[in-house]
Amino acid sequence: MTTNNTKEIKKFLVKYLSEKVEDVDETIVDYITGVFEDETVTGDQSELIEILSPILMDISFSADEEDAKVVINDLIDKLVQEKLIIIKLKQQLTTLSQPVALHKLDDRVDAAVSWMKQEESISIVNKEQLEANEKRYNARRDARLAKEERKKLRQNAALAALNNLKEQQTMMSSLIRGSNQSRDIHVEAFSLNYGKTDLIINTDLHLNYGRKYGFIGRNGTGKTTLLRHIASREIGIDNNLSIHHVEQEVNGTDTTVIDCVLEADVERDQLLKEEKRLNSLPDSERNNLTAKFQSIYERLNAIDAHTAEARASSILSGLGFTEEMQQVPTKQYSGGWRMRVSLARALFIQPDVLLLDEPTNHLDLFACLWLETYLINWQKTLLIVSHQREFLNAVCTDIIHLNNKKLDYYKGNYSVFERTRNDRLKSQQRQFEAQQNQRKHVQAFIDRFRYNAKRAKMAQSRIKFLEKMDVVSEVSDDPTVILSFLEPDPLSPPILQFQDVSFGYTPDKLIFKNLNLGIDM
Image 1 (cartoon, rainbow, N blue to C red):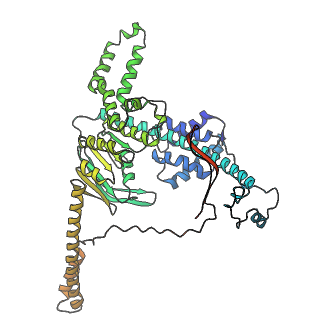
Image 2: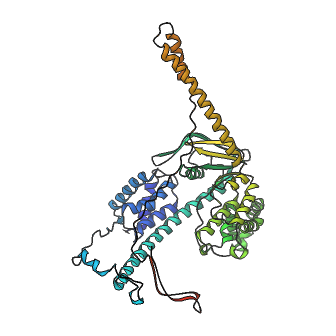
Image 3: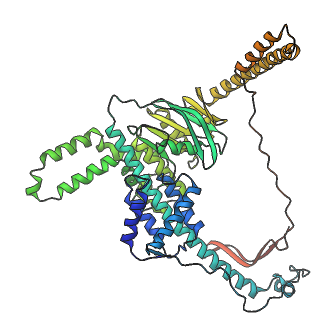
């Protein structure tokens, strides 16, 4: 896909997106423009939907992927009509240079050869053909991986920009909140869906400030989706609360780990940049800015900016980063370690509401124990999705159970939840059985006397009684997951083959040399 005018595309996108979204962010516009300018993007509908639909849904321009598909098609059509982009179609078919007789290909392989008899006959395939096929395969694989990597980089850049915006909103929310405003969250009778699937129906969300909630439920029921909607305030949460959702690893850049954490405090970062800018002015101008400098220093003192680096370093140390590791650029770390950096940023800025989704997944034992102790002393609202019952027992003061598309609330940790829920279910089952017996008895009376002239009035009153009776649901256990694995067909030998293979950790210290080995079923 090629473009004719970058500025005109940006102008068109701002106008197009502004129809549904207020204050369209320039980062999003630049990202979408970059997608249309990318020579590797062909204009194929499925490819563009995969790239752009997460962004359109994240800024609430599209409700779901189906809506995004319609929007993307409309956007492409309009850009083509305005002659701002040119679609380059991929070649779909390739003509063979000569006929191929499939039965002759079988002659190249003699399945009856005993490939272990002698070294010369180890391979049972045509080596030249194998090498040619391998080269073609590697070329296609490298091209595919390069394309996927470019796509991933574009998506990560856009998501990083969105995360930065959310972090700025988190910090600014704490600035604009008045001291008398409540920091509790109460959302009544809300529903949540993913595409056409209902995840939560007509239920209430209650998060009291200072409580630590464990959020549990079967996989795929909507826990992570609810966390995202809370973070984006899409279910009616006030803007006066600072909310941070640890969902994605930080982007790998040249920024050191410690600086990456410090930059999460947007207010501190902006104050220091403003101080640096003012200090760069000529003396004649600086002398007239005494009041400005004083206000900056007062605010830095109010937010304990002088202890920020020590606090950030302490958090990183608890999560497994040594002092030397904290000075290493984030791009040199794997995704798991960058996820630790993302967690450290969230703990450092201390939002009013912290949302953690499986925070122990990327941590070793010592980091898990440190995080557990740190969160026990957390003074603000905490909502954790986790399958680690020991972790939930140590940290949580309450449990929220997502069950049957409703949120059920329990006081206490996970062990208390299990006991309380079992007691509730036993009580519910007793009530259900008692009600069924009562309904059976009343129904028998109705069936017996409904057409009896003397007792018809009494039968009608029993019918009304049944209609007004609150129905107690039968207790249903969580369904058991059954996995079925089909018996595979046998594989042709050899399954794995080594020929004249040498291996060692260093060239001068070989572990084995000239190894010839074949592995069969």
